[in-house]
Image (cartoon, rainbow, N blue to C red):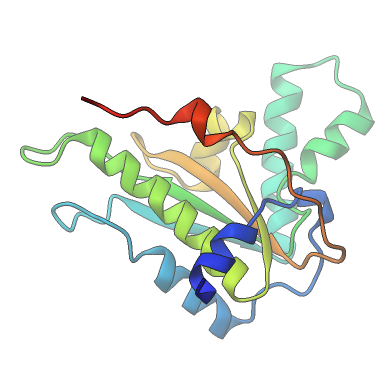
Length: 188
């Protein structure tokens, strides 16, 4: 086996609550985002972009999320609202991968959406290769237009994923993966 195959075989998600400091340095972040952007992109549209949440900005975003939750759930208690307010503050870095997929005369929108998904996966693999741990989430607020507008998404833009990145203090056991016999068929 080679290093890349070994890396892919051991990559696994780590819950956001288990991600610890330190997050990526500015130089590491530039490398991570550069690798994330190296995905199949039919037509060179770059149908995605990044929003970074670090430091105090994570809590400011959490205030937006908590306010939207409270508006939709006026019965929510203080503990639940505090939890909602920490959604993007659990890991040292959260990268929102924003899909800008849209109508195009030659490039199907579905291919653009898949490209944004590939960005998420490249970011996770690059983070693993650099010694970080990560998880790809898209909780309720990824679909809430009030939250999205306040986070700076334009009309028609959607969240492909919130990628939480930090350090993994303790190793985790792998989860059960599907048996190939259950998911592979041969045509013909």
